Image (cartoon, rainbow, N blue to C red):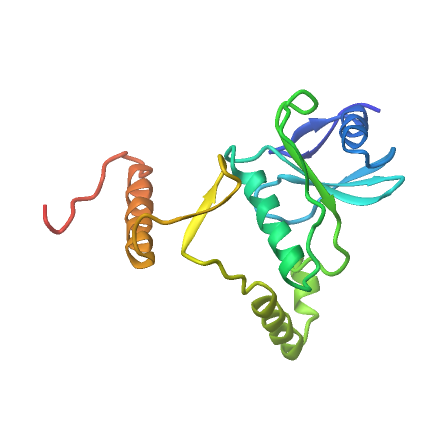
Amino acid sequence: MAAREYSRRLGSIDDGQFRSALERLGLGEFVRAGPVAGGLFGQNVFVTSTTGEYVLRGTPHYDWQLPAERFFARLLHERTQAPVPWPYLLDPGDDIFGWSYAVMPRIPGLQLSDRAAAERLTRDERFGIARSMGENLALSWPRPGHYDLATDTIVPLEESWTEWVAAEARRSLWRSLDATPTGRRMPTQAG
């Protein structure tokens, strides 16, 4: 079959590429692929093989994106009862698609990014979803930290949590100001 564009970000992908990825990860033979409606960045495509339904995620924004997602999916899998995309299989190579990718099981249920599906939920159902997410996502770590690609774990922050949040807010502000049409930073109150 000819290549098909599943999203602008992923670009054109042909069935042979899906076959190669599934074979490499030991996930059976390729049956079909389909676009994912919604989502933030167009990084996902649904893939069905002879062993099940999966989500292929590609074109990572940063070298640490997919490894960090795998790390947190593993933590959620090990420490909660929440349905999570596990196993999160990662291929760091770029020889199949031109970028690294991950493949994970497709979790059944509603896609809450689908406005029509979300609007069908009652107020109590929405609160129930929020409550469950809060209970299941309440992971703890001995100290505040951030994901580190080199060690594939959370490394402690060098400053307090409050100082880190303030510094991140300032960095984000300066990045956004640098992206203004004129490329000029706005003056601070201090001058």
